Image (cartoon, rainbow, N blue to C red; front, top):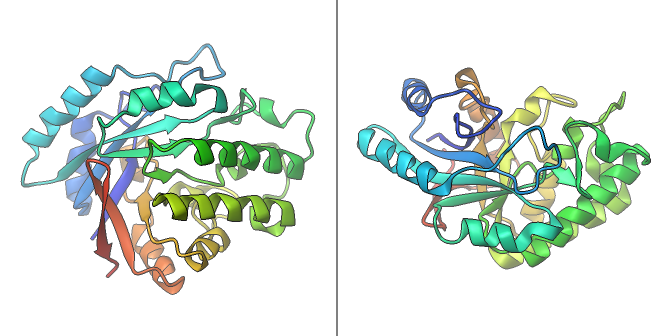
Length: 269
């Protein structure tokens, strides 16, 4: 029972994988269901790169592959939607009810790119983490057109710091995270467990960390998706078996897939 709900195809500027490569590799490694979640980041802060997609072409292409692989692989129409406070209305309009599944992700903060490090300028490490979480809180409180928050503590990937702590180690960050998680639970939204986290930081945790996942469970959170954040075919389904065991150890009983925006629960085996 493996579902990869964070995959990037050539529709994303930062991936060269074809949909056929994704589907064939998914079948080969035993994935039962996938969601293609290409980037749509309106007003992305690096003008040299466009992370916006043609929605009609994207959806029609995914529908072609759904038909092509019917009976072999379940393919869901997903989207990774980059949220920023000043574009929430545009994001809602783009997402609408067109997708099975929408990841709400944060690749910028305060209109500055996390990847390039621009956002960190002028802040200490913990100040940057707090400011990032404030923006996440602002957006999830006001935005509803999404299924789960993607890689909640993704900021741990970025910044030139010698030590990458767990955001829960700081009391202010912990308070912000708790408020974010409470909003998700109240709204019936969920969290992505992004296994690309095993490539970063302490390499022992996904994104978000075990500590964040534990708190989410304590607050009544149940909706979880697993995603590899694949940009290359050898990343598909990365460390899913180990992740399932970790989630069971934390007390989670179900993983979630989505159909037309509605969660479907599957018992973790």
